[in-house]
Image (cartoon, rainbow, N blue to C red; front, side, top):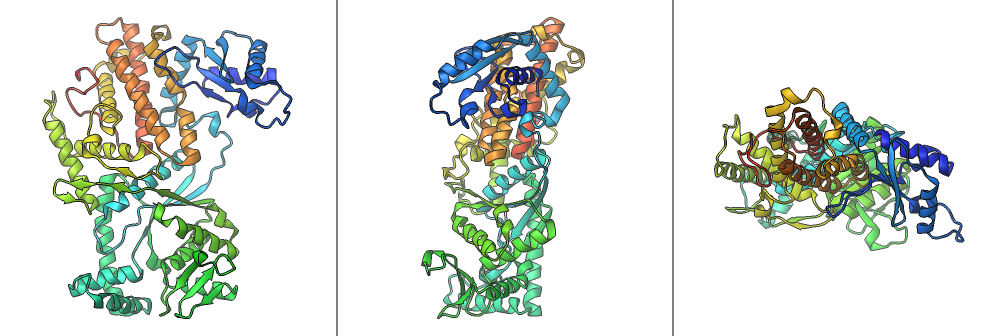
Length: 565
């Protein structure tokens, strides 16, 4: 943590007679303000008093003033004041500049992750199940959100030092799969009434181990995974394990036997097997686990998969990333695991997300993910071609796809994951405003500055040369990165990081217009270059966590920025 923060901890620790670690979550960096200069850190008096049940205490504002009067400035803390239920601290400007920039450069990709906020964090084994497309069908665009959200969660957990196992649990079994394969092989219309019956019979053959049926199944499965791996490569996503419902066709029968042995399995008049989670016959709490013909269901296979993963990985947490329509399903699966005697069911977590509406290409409704990827690449190439470049890009298709993916991911991650949102191609590709395109522009522009001036100016710098309001605002914002990472690690919402990076990019664009490097005295140019390098480093770190690959060159002129050098 930076020197100023540590001094504030120790100062308050002495006055309040509390261990410094008790103050970690009560002290935060102050959000920047465009209207006025703000302090660097603030102590929330409310959070300090949360556990104090003494109702006779004076109000929080009075408490804040009394505490501020007991504190004294020193060579590190230059000013102490009070705000709304806070005590505010301003750090010596040269010290703030030196410690923040040094820390960003020294910590590199670990900046923000070495914070006191994460100290003592136990290293865990975490399973993340995400994407999970249906085999024997092309990769549907409906699986995009699960893929990019799951990838973000896995990236964040890994960055925090946890051991992460990324699992792609394919929809490669069950009645639906039987129908896909049957229709493909027999070339019959999917809405033919006889198809459902024939698909059911085909699935029964699979469950019974029919050699011909299994051979067809294996062929479709292998071809599908080959196609998915190619699409995942374009997305920059990988998996440690390709699993699937088929892996648990036998183990699901063991689950049924276990449920029966515990007296939890009930047979219905129709011949199906159910589990009553309410214990009193409440129909909304009935979960079907076996069809009348004895074949397994999605829930049964999920139970078998969870038990198998605990045996295999002994995980501390298992996270399922699916749409909110499966909320009840996972509630029932976790509840069944618990009544089966598996206490570790409490370690299982469902991260639900909303629906994307209106994702269409110029040719009409989008069904397949690859259509979306091709569309974003095409649109971005057209945007790039419309602006003259000073240098030819080595691989314009790759750059266009990376910028386009950034645009797609930022639009998706800006709001609450649980919210539905309306997709807009025009909004996605805006180069001004809060978009992924603007983030990529900013990174490319800052990289260009380093390429042009880096050799001559990055050896040493004078901190006294970075006292302008624009510099201070950036430094104060860099201070907050660890808090943003902490917030996202707590609720698994990427929007905190997205908002932070967009603000950082806007601050950098404003600073670049006033803090010139070219024709400035060497020590001033050097200090400013260090500042912009720190911004680019943190920007790149945050983008990578979100699943975005930063690009180093796009256009000769970026909106909101002066011309590329």
